[in-house]
Length: 226
Image 1: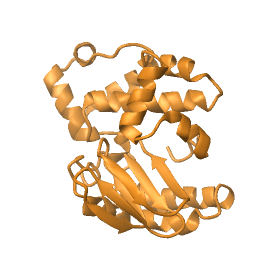
Image 2: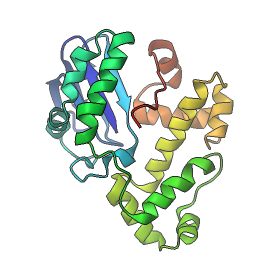
Image 3: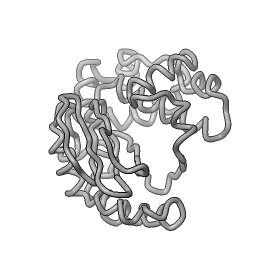
Image 4: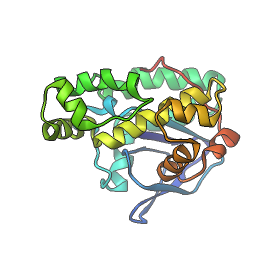
């Protein structure tokens, strides 16, 4: 799931239905097509793991309407991040962290997902991202039917197993790139077949090539909100 905040005036966002809406902030469901039609030159984009949204209030379907994305951002006070983050990254980072911790995250259920099988799965996956992950094998290891496991993953995390694993692999690649690993090495270590595979997945999920992320954004790895 993504939180997108405009820092210098409102933006116009479009969803997969070509609906458009002007807003200052938005919470975007996992796997939901979207695009910034126009807006300010500076913004804040936060990627949050799906398990942060175990509260059904926050598990939005990718088919949720654009108005719901904006409404949810207001419930959590995400729109306040815009003013707090204008002095980025120094005091803006501190202000963003404070607001997320004090206001947004209590509204976004930060507790681990509820079903025991999902908790066990979430503990297993991070150490296995460098190889293939098959739901059938994992279900057998956990001691639950594959159909039941697939159901509770979608229910607790709001996304299917494959999408959750892709999110984990992407995040692992970002972490490795931040340590100055090559794109090929980082992609392999996160379980992608090669750098081209990672680039295809990245472009499909974000709408632009990963090199653009490196060139035009400032990424700060910060685990203090987790």
